[in-house]
Image (cartoon, rainbow, N blue to C red):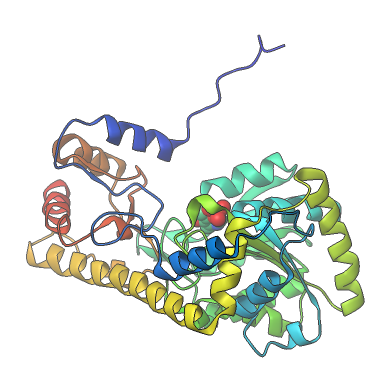
Length: 397
Ligand code: PMP
């Protein structure tokens, strides 16, 4: 049975981590990771989470099955976070939300449900995108195409290219859009850009699938949801996958949600019944712990305020690191202007470093980054930033 099974290719980022762990140099720095590290280089356990866990521990609650679509209060809280407290689509009961196994689980549920509907069979993702987008939608049976997004010559957006490519797709194609904090580039769309994208998507009857994995890491919780709210105002039907992995520093708890905006309450009920079927036949129903904690935090005013403060401090620390990095590179006489790094949002930055420069960072300075030039800005801190900027200046010479 297993004789013809070939070895699957290694995940490039996990491979990078393995090489980092095996590196004996003491002063090594890992900027290849995809998680938020605090000033001490650790994954934080948020205070709001720790308090909610204490309450949960005291309650000694039994662990029965959850409903197929998860905890109702959690699903409602997710909707408010994404669509806004006073959202019309919430009031009109046109959104279906199901708790999911992280943001990845939400994408997979959405992919499987969409596969039963009438689409072009093509899924368009940004070039570049989070690598799992391509693999996940390919495995779910779609043809995956790229649309232009990042322009290396400006370290910014190729907006005209993006519009042209969305226009050129067959009607009713699924378009994956990073709602904020684009992974891997950090380059985001402006509100004006979103208006134009919405127009094209509407005309071509494409199906927007917004992926929001970093809400609160860009400009603020409300600001980062701008795209979701603009799509809701447009009256279109669309999909949203969301995740608390980053915003709750909750990576291993796998807490996310799939939300689908429909046209009517009655349509929402039919859609929910089908999403439940997808869940039921995959993993029956979601796990309790993570979503219970998120639910307790979001629905308790005190814990919610504490969480928002903690999220803001993660966001601000990343912004400080961006500013400091650019200042240091300038002061140290880098042969290029890195000012664009301040304009980027979220955890990641496409630095514009070439694969050869990234290799020199690793070989000569024990600094690990992805060969595309992506670094995790959240892995920088006051202790390592000097070494990083010294090395970047050197490899850019
Ligand atoms: N979408 C994007 C753009 C991401 O960067 C990630 C996480 N790296 C996800 C989805 C998946 O999130 P989760 O870890 O919650 O599955």
